[in-house]
Length: 206
Length: 408
Image 1 (cartoon, one colour):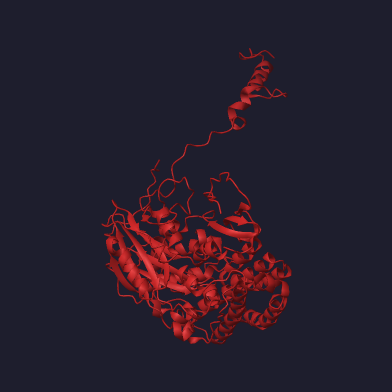
Image 2 (cartoon, chains in turn blue, green):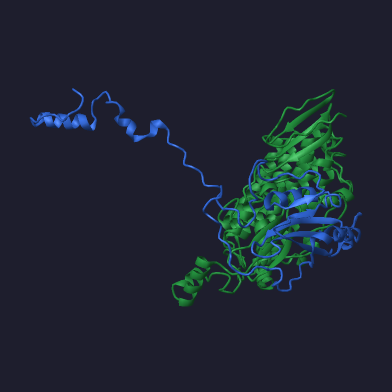
């Protein structure tokens, strides 16, 4: 059950990756889901030995809605000194995923580390990976509903009914029986009435 | 080998066992898993035939929380990820935001020196925790006390600079929060002086210790191909022979100005990782003593830009403009131009990266961490096959995972 507390969502037209100023952090490619697998296989054979990370981004109002981001790094697959490694090339692949078809090919056979990375994207964004050996939730409990890092996922979780107070904590309980001292409000009223010589208020006989 | 299904997490079922096979669930409450890691292992006699690490027991949704905080507030939760070296996380995050803002080259040199100092101090502190607990794992309990004594000195230095031991939130957008206090450098000198002796003690306790060597040499061997394919970075990759260090490959905060070596080994076993980390501690101290020499010169520690950093408190009472800027930054936060950027630093565990997306608002649209520990924990699936069940503990220890970062 979704909570009425929706997360604050920015109103700006969303494609930050297009409006990006030139920053010297990686070579960026934008790619379609259909070509993704082919392109990654190609890059793998070109020496991009490390798949640093797979991350997801939900742009909500943009089409395609999601971006799955692959960070690749070119490291030599042999014993290498600092000068051998040098300044390795970084490549970033942004793969747009439409909201109505959230499926991508898995690359867990190219880089084994993609296993958990893809499971995390699946868990937190609900994007499935075809051909993944063991696609199930990784961070959230197995029976969790929804995908928390989506922007329309409520920020505070489902609203729950308030836990009922235990019976012993209810104030009405105090009136349930006269304490041994007889110092209840009614007993006091009655004592006052008797002391003033008035008729005691109706109640249990003293 | 009969087909014994590894039970799914959190819905453990009774598995039929046959012959010599047995399914052992190690953790999530186990002292040697360094946090809340569950490894469901299938063993034949003493030998592990299959291992399935399960994580997520410490998932706190830090990435989601950070999306709903101001850019400057987000570092408070980000520091909680890798809680053994919090300032490394904050440093990487701020480097990414500063790159988006385009102010990366305007950070004052003294602020950069303090950042380098803090990140190297925290590398040593983090390795101290690793070494102490790794020692306990293999039965060398006294190492723990020596390590934690050294770490305590570093936490004291953190507290004096930032105000808190573990999560000081000392780094700020555009610099650091306040200069080092009076008398700080003298205490730093005392640590620099004490450190070589303490390291020699630690080495004497373990490095030539035959029991320790027996437990770690040829245990958990990782080939270069496996290490790269499984996304290993940091000391684990360097123990296989690839000298990839982000500080050398993509220098940040002026690391190119300091002289240091990148220690490597080629064996790729738990003992090699141990040696690499010990050498790293020495190199970190080498950097710290170089930073120390530069810290004698005073200078500003915050960027001179009132749109990004609030003006000094004392100017607020006398300047209307300063008051307005301060009010704007505190109540509305800083707006970061739209774009996405990936920045990484060399954390104690490996390449710690932040992929930050901004839509021009005062809150981050998305902060994705590249957690080195998560990729290292995943390697248990291959590294433990064919090893003894008792060596599982050594292998986990040699990977040095931090579960705040694995689960986030």
